[in-house]
Amino acid sequence: MSELDYRYYFTELVRMHGEGKTFAISLHDLMHPQPTDNRTAEEIAAEVVVQAGLKVKDGPTQPIREDRR
Image: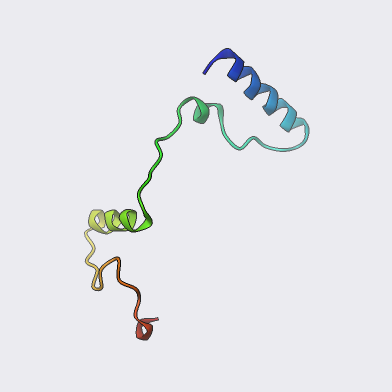
């Protein structure tokens, strides 16, 4: 992060504070962004199932049957 970026961040922070608003992102998060997770919801759910050691009866991609709702 350059000095110009820092000055812009700080200026916006002070301006928004004067308006009674909060800044949506911290300076730390701007300097150290988290990697983007591009997995689908099904992939994330499948990983959670595997890590938790769960067994799925119908499989994660099959729709819920009407008689089970």
